[in-house]
Length: 384
Image 1 (cartoon, rainbow, N blue to C red):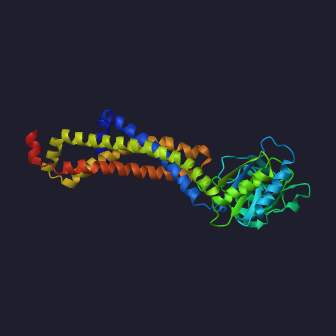
Image 2 (cartoon, one colour):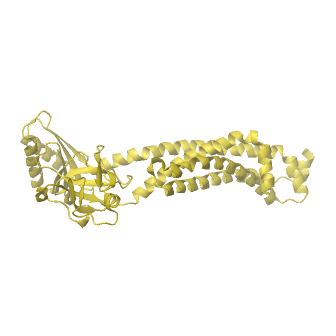
Image 3 (cartoon, rainbow, N blue to C red):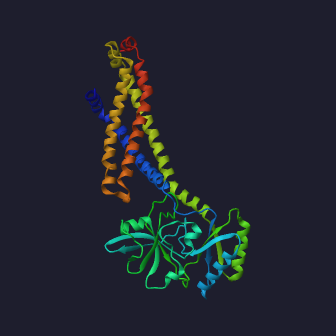
């Protein structure tokens, strides 16, 4: 039966060439779409590593003021912490959670190296974002006394640099000393992959880090925001203040992540509709041209289900040819480790795309094949 179906497809290879290309193109677009979906679903199921509810980012801009900037930032932080609506406050670099800013650098331990996201913070950062420390402790300002800069690693950075070794007290890149380890920290949102992260203790005298993160009490509204901004601008002339709610910044990051998925989904849907229409038309035309053949087979004893199965089998063989071409391209992604994505994600995407293509061609073949099964032999042979 399979050999017969292969001969039928091969004898009509010119007529089916465009349909094969459409199936291949639809598979490749589906492969890209399902890869994005699998990656995002996997990332979303991993813990974020911190709490963003009721957290605000207060961005300070000193504009043209260059006099005692660090001291003024510290006074502002002290004033903000004094408000009864504020539960905790911290000072950090500009790459606060869900922001567009990034800062990364290579860090090494012996022969092991990794590219990590760096966050410059103070001793209250973990408290403000409720980050649990799973090993050691969070650094304190008193730890700055010494030769090395205190740091805390996330688990991803710890695994890449130390494996199963204990990282506490170890020195990295001849300048950092590890004080603790946290679990995950996905600063760009749930859809971000768990990248290596390093938190280093801020130099209190530095004027470059002018972002404050605060955790306010539940129910705190814009009225307090206005009061806080007025208090800050009263303390420092010609400074500007911008407040970002982390919940709003998180939504913006999610929208940016989901846009490529939506675009791929639209393109994929368009191609799948074209493939479905093409298959439907090919099957209807094939049935119209082969009514005599169908009538003769029915007269010789073929059942309606046998006729229907033949047409479904033909379309499966046609889809298989198109998928085999797609496999040759798609399998290069896990083999060559494209985009540094795990091979299992690509293989899962290939499997899902294959199921969708076979499901599509089967759905398109059901109605025409049932129509072929209903052809009566006497009517078909009389027409011939």
